[in-house]
Length: 117
Image 1: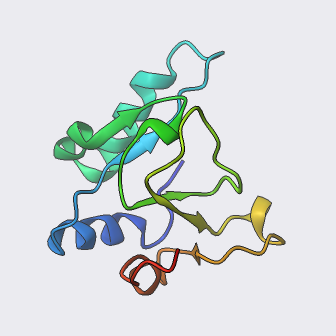
Image 2: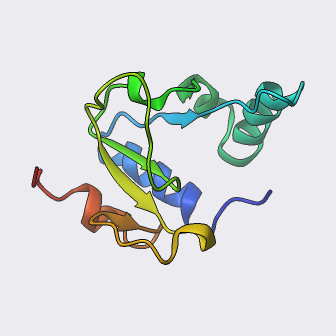
């Protein structure tokens, strides 16, 4: 798949701002080549230095951070998350109200805001 317009530039800008950015992704269990294809996509679209920033986990609640940007409406797992969830705008979640809805054009306003919870 091609990257979402503005996504690669937004990730690079986050690094420029001094943020510790990680790509948190879940493997698809039924597909033999899923993990290697995820790494190959990141390397092709963002460059090899981004591969060291991949966190591969089926449970994103085990990852610590300030924000998790995800298109899944409800991210659940075995822990209480330390991060706030920013819902990335996608066709399948457009009808869902969310206090931190973003796209790659509005991310900075939302993610740089002080904690409200």
